[in-house]
Structures are given as C-alpha cells and as structure tokens.
Amino acid sequence: MKLIWAVIQPTKLASVEKALINIGVTRMTVLDAMGYARQRGHIETYRGHEYETNLLRKVQLEIAVNDDFVDRTIECLEEHARTSVEGHIGDGKVFVVPLEQSIQISDGQRGPGAV
Image 1 (cartoon, helix red, strand yellow):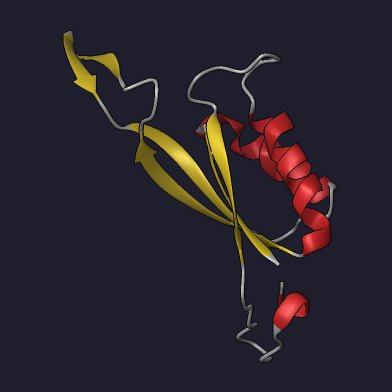
Image 2: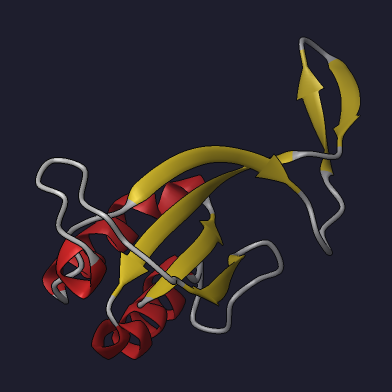
C-alpha cells in the first residue's frame, strides 16, 4: 500500500478527479493548500493597487492505493494535472510514501481491503 500526495492547480481538480474515477481510484481526500516553489509567487492587482503574494492557492490530494494501482495513479496525475502538453512551472508535484497500515473505521477491516 502507498499513500500518494499530489499538489495540483485548483483548475485541474475536476479533470483529475474524473480521470482517477475512470481508472478505478474512487477514494481520495481533497484539501485546500497554499504554497510556492520555483514560481515564487506573483503580483496581483486589487482595487487598483498592486501587491505581491508569495503563497499561491493549490489543491492537495491524498490518495491511498494498493500496490497494483500506484503506477497508473501516478501516470493519471501526470497526464491530467499538467496545464499544457509540455507543462509549466507551478503545475504541481506528486509524492509517494509507504503506507504501513490502513483501518476502515466502520467495520474494522485492515490492510489492503480497507483501501
């Protein structure tokens, strides 16, 4: 089992969600997030005044998958979270970490069956 964290553009959430459902990934947690990396923020205008914002709005997905779904989930995220064919700075990141245990609270099921 693996836990996949993906940080993506908010505008790509709907297409990523639809694509994940199509490959059989039907469970995920979606969180609002703010951050920056190489793009280092940007300048915005509000009521005629310019100001610099360092933290940009992102969406974080937390997806627990069994080992046989890891590669297809990553490929799906890469394909559908990219803002253009070649991609842009700020499209996001995907992190994959081992998931030691999974427990379904409703019935106590443990392990891969709970994912």
